[in-house]
Image (cartoon, one colour):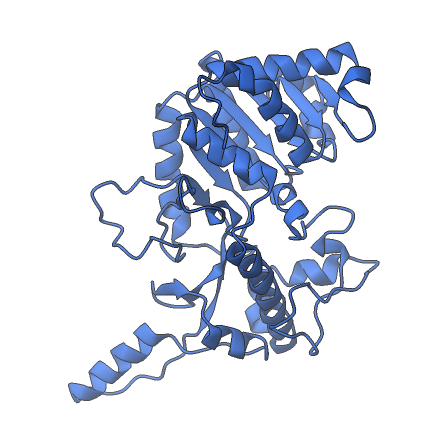
Length: 364
């Protein structure tokens, strides 16, 4: 069922009965759910000042940065562009084979890192990020899988902050322990596409936090050397073995189109564990559902949630493509409701309606 929800245009007292009923149905289902799986896209971060990719003002409709880009800039230096192809090229694995595109990619990543870090330093979260945190606090969050690379899930107040799953090739706060920890499946958030706050080696398994030394080089459009690879070379010299040229480099730990990653081998383990946990609600929010791998993830969780008698909901400002509203898919029951709404407006309303169901008056 398609539901348009815009409280700024239509106050609650004037909204249709169908809209009110749909919101009430979702809220009641949320109140009784105990294993909610949340899948997110760039739409949940736009109100914090992070650009999405495919929206009307997204990065795919913007000009890549020029050499005048500055690491100290808190806003991306992007200009309108008629064609989105050039910006899309900056997110393909082949970008490191082209010096000019590679430099533009590194500058853009530096700007995104600066913006995400600024927001994180202010402990700022959007209402949607706060909502996911509330799900955790109330013991309802099974897991959050995000396409976002901004790391805002880990922002906000330290108490009750969402934790990140440990994935190879992606450094996240608290991920310094080895992956062989007692429980490898810890972590509230699985970052499907990497993190703009992390860097990794192009060759070995080393990853680490994005530091000022990386910003200093990336903003100039050049990569840095991998400390682990250099250490191995030095060890060979110490052992009087034939030296090897270091051909690897450190780059932002963001998963690009056309490349494989070590994390891809681990993520299915999280998915299987969460499917086996019998999720009883699926909330897909802030995404246009155009990435094939993410679409398959949605379908897998939707099928499991439906088999457990749960409810599946999509929330996004732009309606889903025909694939999701086609009668064939409706029959398959991908989504019970599709709310065409700002993500923050939707969760604000849901939290307000959810309060009577909560045993405590502490909603934060």
